[in-house]
Image (tube, rainbow, N blue to C red; front, top):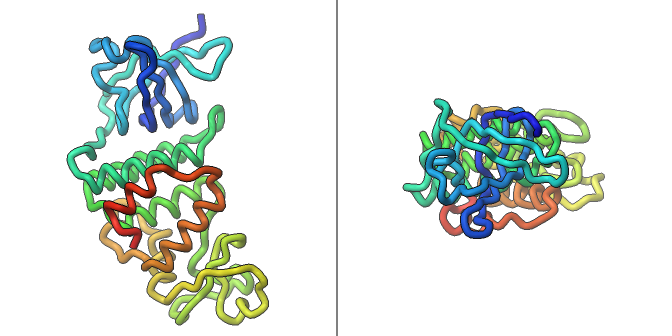
Length: 253
């Protein structure tokens, strides 16, 4: 029998299976993204105690199966890990579910994801302690894509590398993952999204701020929100189901 492993984990997605089992997707600190089956999870209070719900932050115990992708989840414990209390506020719940889905979309099974796990812990902690708003959403998007290797740049032109602080307008080019200045735009064939000075400055600042401070910072306007949305769509290979709900609760900008 495979040895039991343990790792801190956050529940990203869950669904009931058969009469008493539950299939759970988790982002873990030490084992990347995992899919697991918890036998009797809906009936066993001793082993799980409702700790395999959305946003649950637990010490996960599991055994790998010789064949098949799902691991066997043997138990889940609080273990002093920071809980995330988001369900009592619609805005926090909406943004939190989006954070979970984006983290799931940018991670893969059997790949190291400790950085994504710690970033999600930071984001959900900031969300629980602060406001659910467009600034925190944008800061999280920028940080998570940077972790995934798709860092977006809003302070310097991707072509001439000149600082664009104080520029009246810049142009976000999806294929370049950043902005080009007005002068370089004239010789750039790709389509671009025009960003006003306020949105460009806001996104540059949000990309640097710790997430706990992001909700108090200015958010980019509709032009900045559109730039990020188009970039997300270019990288993620499916439509994120939580976006429509989130946009109906919290304006994108």
